[in-house]
Image 1 (cartoon, rainbow, N blue to C red):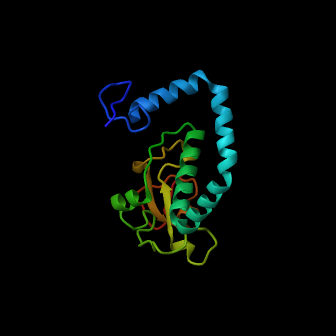
Image 2 (tube, rainbow, N blue to C red):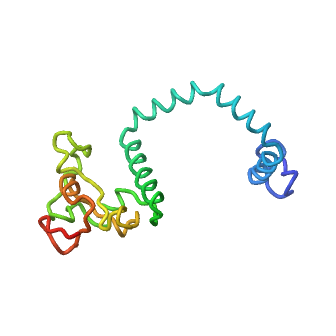
Image 3 (cartoon, rainbow, N blue to C red):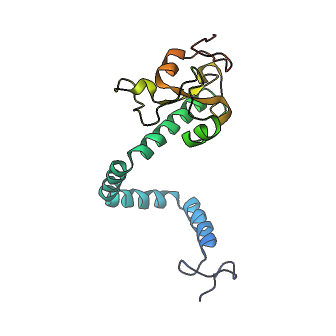
Length: 173
């Protein structure tokens, strides 16, 4: 077993450094040699681009729901940050666990197996994540400001502020 030549405590796993010391060393090297680091990165990216593209395509084909969920999260975060609204990451599973699978607007059950993309058959009963206070009106993108809704209910509601105690599409501006 080799001991890290920097901290003299941990086991050296990467050459003569332990993992934390190697990270510190690499960061210092990249700060001191930015142009050389950029050239190395460009060369590596060019050499491995085809492998990366093939890997990404395989992943997207085998995990379409994960890819869609990632895209939705990214879009919600981008929209919140663009408007200087608060943002805290959450998942659709967290929303469903906290608020159940009833539409908060009409109180009817949501079909979780229905397609979610507008225009596809059955989309109107599918799950949409609705902001109680819309991002466009200064609402935050966090778990406390979102509720599950039917696709159709969410589209009809648009950018209005929903009052949770009202049902059957009674909405206020």
